[in-house]
Length: 74
Image (cartoon, rainbow, N blue to C red; front, side, top):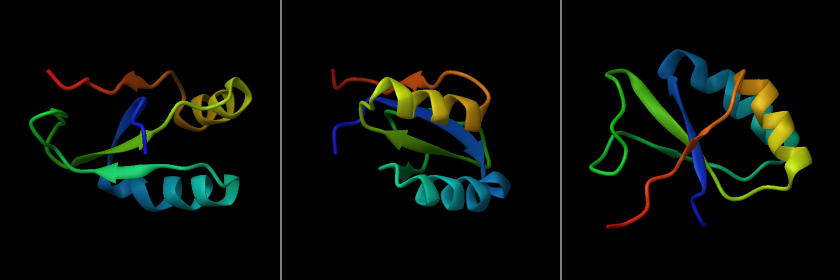
């Protein structure tokens, strides 16, 4: 899957967000902190491919704002 943008979320929010995304049938991956993603302690990243603007608007509403661009390989 092409990785376009992501949201960092706490572990406590993850279950609710996974259920909502699965119900919306939106493709996503969950990633833990790595060299490419510097996250706070207790956070994971929900990573998305490029999406149609209508789908992105639903995602933006669910997360309460815009996602962060997924870092490109150096």
